Image (cartoon, rainbow, N blue to C red):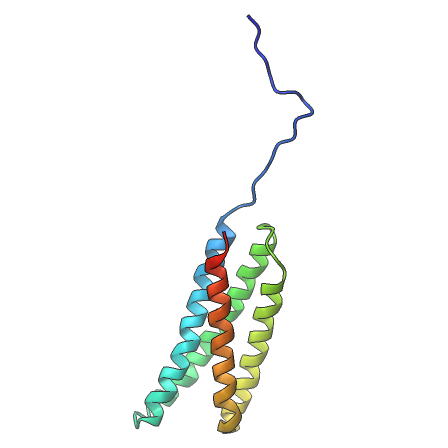
Length: 135
């Protein structure tokens, strides 16, 4: 009776870790929700609830931080997760748009601030949707 062992030349197949994908899903979803809430708070302000402007401003800070955290999660999806590189660039771009959005908001350039806000929300929602579609 002999015990057979695997040949030493056999390669060990290592799968990529799954945890970076879950972190990316959660952080991108939270960022998208916080950015969507920006429109809600702005709408409340326009409806006459003037305290919502302060909430809109404070949430902008936290939403920007959430986008940075999602960008870090995108780095983890790439390394060690083996995923694509473009979500890192996409979140860096969204963060740059948020910085521009803040400048436009404080400058009261509403005709640019509002449409840019829509673009930011759509981009972040698209990134969150993409995150959940990945295996």
